[in-house]
Amino acid sequence: MKSIPLLIAAASAALLAGCSSGPSKQHEHWSANSVGPRVGYYLTGYDSEVDGEYVEYQWRKKQSIRRTLRRHLLNDNPENPFTMPAEAPNTSRPLHSPLPNPFNYFGVEALVFGGITYAAGGTFIPIPVDSLIATFSPGGGREFVEGIQETAEPAGILLLTVLPGESYETDAVITGWSTPAGH
Image 1 (cartoon, helix red, strand yellow):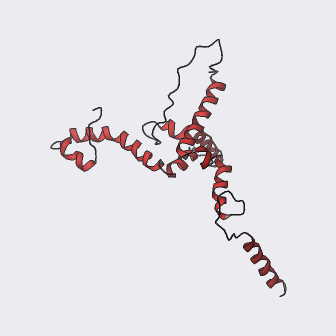
Image 2 (cartoon, one colour):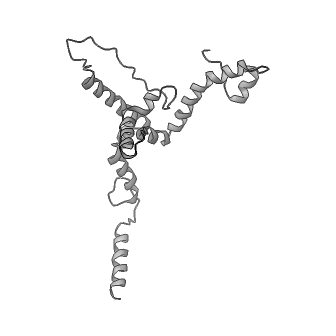
Image 3 (cartoon, rainbow, N blue to C red):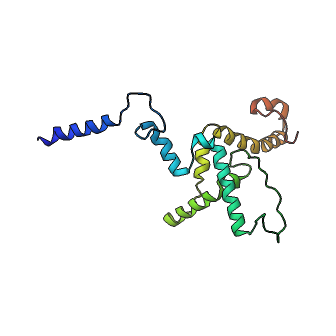
């Protein structure tokens, strides 16, 4: 019976030791606000103060992985004097969306996670973890929807022009499309 009050006192002391009376800071080790960013950093390598937005960070990370794989597997090294120099890659980041180009969204990490799910359960399910995190980060959802709208717009315009009795001008207001594809 004496051990129960001692156990409650010890648990209370441990909980109160973690509390801070001043403003909590994200990088203080004993602050509860530091847990999320630290876990995120150790799982993804992302530090918001250094790397900027997560959408940009994951794109740079994917480009680095692609460049490394290209150099090792395809022997594509710009410093090699015996090979033709490759074209400079496009440095602008496309919209963060699986459409129109799913390879930009999924990347190599999705193939790795797909291999893990295949080994664990017999079904290949590519899971783009970095892309999903970026989609739910600020600005990622907007780009996700813009990419899908950009891809679906030509099909919607084609459908509106093929249907009898429908016109693009009257339905553009309803669908939210303002210009035909290619104009």
